[in-house]
Amino acid sequence: MHSAVLVQSDLLILLFLVACSVLGLGWLLVRYVSRQRTDSRLGEETSRALLNASTDPCYLLDAAGRVLAMNHAARTLPDVPAAGSSLFSRIPPALATSRLAALEQVMRSRQPLRLEDQHEGKHFEHNLYPVPGPGGVIMRATFSTRDVTERHGLEATLSSTVQFLRQILESSTTVAIISTDRQGLVLFWNTGAGNVLGFDADESVGQKTIEQLLPSDDASSQEVLMKVMMRVLGGGETVAHIMPFIHRDGRRRTLRVTFSPQHDNAGAVQGMLLIGEDITERELARRETEQAERQLRLLAFTLNCAKDAFVISDLDDHVLYVNQAFTDMYGYTEEELIGNDVTMVRSLATPPELSERIRQGTRGAGWSGEVMNRRKDGTEFPVELWTSTVRNDQGEPVALVGVAREITERKAAEDKIRASLHEKEVLLKEIHHRVKNNLQVITSLLSLQSAKIPGAEIQAILKESQTRVKSMALVHEELYQSEDFSRVDFADYIRRLTANLFHTYQTGPVAVSLRVDVKNVYLTVDTAIPCGLIINELVSNALKHAFHGRAEGSITIRLQRDGAAHVLTVSDDGVGLPPDVDPWTTETLGLQLVSTLTRQLGGSLAVIREKGTQFELRFVEQLQRRQEG
Image (cartoon, rainbow, N blue to C red; front, side, top):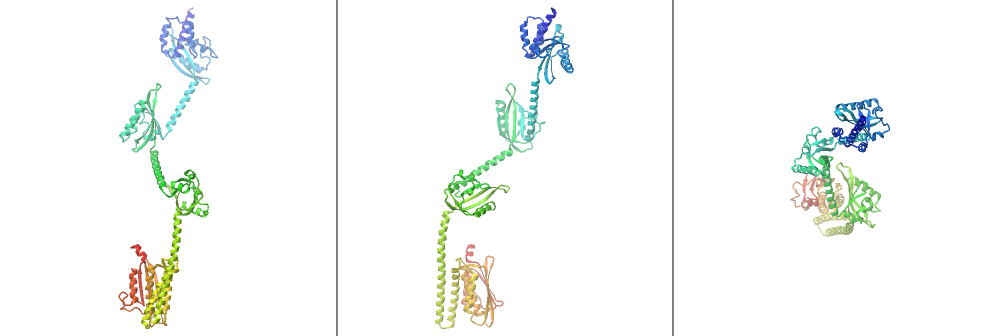
């Protein structure tokens, strides 16, 4: 009877301990044990309900580990220990020794114990509670067990995941990741934070606040930072913010940072998580890009205002951009042109060699010229084209640009001008021809007049006049026979002029030779006529007076350039000019004419009286003097 009562009492203790284990109320153990000794009114059905409430196997053990009682969960196990047998007899000795030692510790210390061990590849969690007996002596203990293999695996996975995430956070060397408490004091600091802000973890974690780590010389920036932190800590908002700060080394930098609230299990904000990135260079690049885009928009607006057609293509001649004038000129829409070959607007009759010259020239120093292009409707028209290569800062080609200007009206005007010019050329040639003929008529009249006037002196005067008129007529004859009516081939003119003078004045026995040193010299009419008259006077004077008493002689005519000036030299190796003859004051008509014509040319005349006579005339062409003046 006593034994049955004891067993029933122990069973009640076991049931209560199981319930306490399930409900987490182990602290009620002592109170319950003291009460159960005085209150045995708990019914069998209630006891069984408490016993079966636990899903974990639970045993009441004595000090040797023998089973005194067990719950329903324990009885459903495959190997149910018999009452009075050791609970640890079927496990390895080392494991059994460990569990018995834990049981002894609980009964000796009168304190509950939790332990974990491993058996047959599974992890188990055990809870031991001391059970006071009569007089408070600890003779028994409860032993509950639970298979925590799955939980252990989850914990291991969680631990591995946490370690992996920590490695990720620490391996991020360019992104700052910082955790703080509610006062902004740093709790976590990764390597990236040190690189971005310049502080080590040792001097940051638990030492500095966010305000100290993100200093700024701008009071307004600090005020904005405080407001952002208040929104995160006070309102639980997540705020993305771009802010200036001063790096530890003194450099002014720009940080893009996201402030996120960190919540505890009850949902209260307990701190902040900051993820920041130094975007100084990126921000500078963004501003430069925005500036470049503004410039491009301005350029595009400017080009759209231009009347010339602009096209920009890639290095393979595919159209990237056209302005409004281009679409108006060729009749295509912008969509029809972008991406197509720019040569689609070129005339089909364009020679392949011209296309190749344009291509090579564009990729070199540039090309310019006239080409025939065609509109969308097939009509062709002439354009003046300029092309060049766009290069980057490194000098590498990045694009091609072409500018076209329609010249249909200009070509028509040029044709009219050309036709008009041809008419004027014909008319001018006819004028020169008639002037030459009229001068020849005057020469013939003088010749007829001299034949009817007695007296050698008057005949000589008329002959001189004839030569002068002929020298002027020769100029008009040169112009009449030339393709260029503005300039005279002076070398040919001198040869013809001197041939006429030699034919007119060399009638005596003196053999006079002539040397003409004039090459590739072309003079305007205003200069050629005075120079021809001067040569006429000087050569005719030499032929008439320089070789008296001589059997032979020579005359040299030379015209050379000396900088901007021309130097005309007429020399002979005759008897020489008398010392008392001054070309500027003499009353001789020929020399007076020479000095007058020299002044007309704006030149200077020098006379050298050695080994004959040499006249040196230095002058600048009339047209050139007017341009320089």
